[in-house]
Every structure is written in C-alpha cells, then in structure tokens.
Length: 550
Image (tube, rainbow, N blue to C red):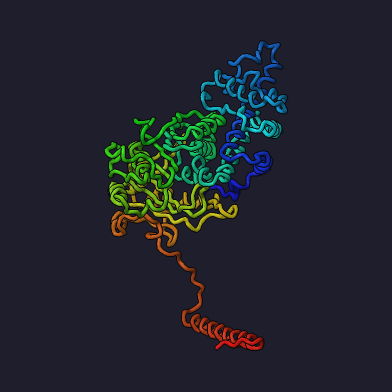
C-alpha cells in the first residue's frame, strides 16, 4: 500500500512566498520572458552557493595543500567551477549598478568554458535594453536572501522544489502557451508510478522542461527503502529526450543540471529530425501537444514509423502514438497523455489506426482523467499505457531479490475511469491527490498480478508466490473494468473507459422498495401542495397591486 499524503504541488510552503515576491517585481514584463530572467538567476545562485561553500572549506585547508582556485577540487565532487566574475557575491555587490545586466551576461558566459554540460544552455540576454535594470537588481537582492545550493539545501532539494514551483506558476501565468513546457506534477507522478522505471532506458520524445525524467529519479529515491534492499536502491536509468523549442530545451537542460542528472537531451523536431533514431527504450513517458495540425505530416506519408497506418496530416495524435511504439524495446512499456478524442475518433483514418494498434494487442491500460488538470488546455485528456509484451514474466526492480510477477494479459485491456477524482486547488485548476494516484496505480498493478490465473507460469518464471493463490483485482462498477479484445471489438475499437466500467453501484439503504415508493410519493404530494399554495399567494399579491394572472 502506498504511503498516504495529502500534500499537493500547490501546498509546498515558502516557495509560494518567494514566488509572490518575485512576481511582484515582474511589473508589466510578459511571463514567458520573465520566466527565463528569474530561472536563470536562480540557477546561477544554486551553482554559486555550492561553489562558495566548498571554496570556504578549501580556504580553511590551505595549510594542508588545498587550492580554492583549482577547478579540479570542485569537479571531483561534482560541483560546478565558478570563475570570480560569476560568483554571486560579486553580482550582489554590483546589483544596484546600471551595468548589472552586462555583468550577469558575463557571469553566464564565464561559467560555460569549464562546465561543458552547460554549453549553450544558460541565458545571456540580461543586458538587453528592454530589461529594466533596477528590477533586475531587485530580483538579485531577493534571491540573495535564500540558500539553494549549499549542502543542507541540496539534501532537502530546496532548489528542485523552488524550480518546479516556479515552473508551475509560470505555466499558469502563461495559460495555453505555458503548457508547452510544463506537465502538472500529479500527472507526471501518476505516469511514473504506473510504469515504475527502476532500471533501463527512459525516453521522452517531447520532453518540455524534463519533468518526466526528474520524477523518474525521484521515484527511485522514494522507493529506496521499499524493495527489501536496505535502502540501497540506486538509479540505473539512462535518459534520452528531445525538445523542439530552443528556449524550452534550455530549461530542460538546466532542470536536469540542478539535480546532477546526466541525460542525452537533443534539440530538434522529433518527427522530421529524430535525434535518437535507433533508440529502443524500456520506458517511454510523454505529454505530446494535443491535436497539432501543423506538424508537416504531408512530408512523411511513407515514414517507416507508421506501421499501423499513415496519420492524418491535420492531426499529429497518432503520429505521436506510432513514434512511441516505434521506439519501444521488445519488453518496453509506455505511458503518455493524449486528448480524449484519440480514444474514439474515426476521422481521417484515425479509427483504423487505433483498431490496428488494438488488434496488435499493444494497449495495456486506458485511464480517463478529470478535467482542469492542465494549464495549456481545457480539452479533456486521457492516459494511454502500451506494452510490446503482455506475456507472463518476472520483473526485477533495482536490487530487490524478489522480482514482481506479471501475469499473461494477452488479449486483455484494463479501463479506469478517474474523471471524478482530484480536488480544486484554485478556481480553474484541479490536482490528483496522492490518495487518488495510489488508488489508480494499485488498481493497475493488482490487475497485472494475478497468481491464481498463472501460478504454473509464475513458478517456471522463477517468481516467489503467496502460499494461498488468488486474485487481488476486482472490477469496480463506475471505476475499473478488465475487458477482453472481443469486448473491445464489440464497442467498435473505441477505448473510452466509460463504455466499459459502467455506472457506479448505488449503495443499498436497506429500505424496501414498496415502503420507499410510498414515502417518496407522500413527500412529492406534499411538495405539490406547497407549490400550489405558493402559486396562489403570489397571484393574490400581484392582484393587490393591480396585476391579474389568468
């Protein structure tokens, strides 16, 4: 059972106060522009904090031969080397000067030569005339008051929390445009918890600000003590991603760098310039842009990725689906977000493509999501979970000596209707709570594991099973249903969960039907009588002031 936690991404403490102060300094600056101003400075503060803390330690050890100005002293500890002109103390001292923009640009430029992973990543346009230098100095003063990169802050992931909170707030401020770089944390967490990426190659073909990768590594850390390994679980993931928007690609690289995550994050159009053409990933997580029409599909009609039919030039939904399938390893699994229309559309051949994917037995699970989760769109969304292999197998996680056992799920698909879940965190945005996520995840994992149906196969696969066989999964009317391929065919290969899960069971109140009908009929008669009395009273009052109603 997953640990219960009622916290949401909107309830994280001092990050909100810091955001309010930073946002007050934005003035009339567009959120999309201000985002890079603030996040670039926060990043610079982070690497400077870590550097200056180690610099002080080395200064105290000069008598023992330590050299505080030797870059190798920092690289050995995975700390970025920061030249004198880029150190936060220098910038803070010059914050009130008219040249502060130029100084920040010089700091960003000075960091790159000794830190190749940051090449072409850091913003360097703080000197532009349009940026108010007084406000820039005020932002530097504000950020100077927080510690984000020292050892204690790194242990608490202070910067990670601030960075993610700021990303979410910028996404909200930018509305539709903001969704291009940020997927709500609760959706990312649900995808990651469903797929459990303990080990292997993780790929996101439209990675935005790298939220999927960050959450995958957080998943590893969160489960370090839960796998019977004494807390020794370690990350053994290889990260691959691609992002077409250059400024968003820079955000992605910075988001990984602040957490010390190495990843092959490429810049370019995933459809037309696939930068990982030979990759076969064990896990694919993605939130592709919904229903995009200008993806250049007419130039890719004969692409080798379209194994299940050429996607329509006017909608990229099934281009994303087939690109993801193309990059799945033989036992790979994928989880991704799409618009609800993808589950039922028959326009421009989409129905035929979906049918071919279903008949190939690739669809493992479908989840209908509640509305108002995304900053970028009010279009209802769903989660697709695909797998190359539904055969019974043992799945070993990290250093866990006892593997998980997955049953043979061939020609079966799980449908989950989560539309009633979540809670409003403001007037227009909803979040899935940890309890909601745990319920969905446990339903999927219990459905995958059914030792009663395949005990012999499991034992041959080397799995350790309970003494008493039995399934822990049950269909729940209104919430989940395990459907056969034949049932899906009967529904015309439509994958909308509501078609399969049926109506939620109504709780029996124990009152016999005849007695209930007598009581309700008497109650209704009383309401009719009261309605007639009120109608007569209103007519009488109107008549007294000269208005008669026939």
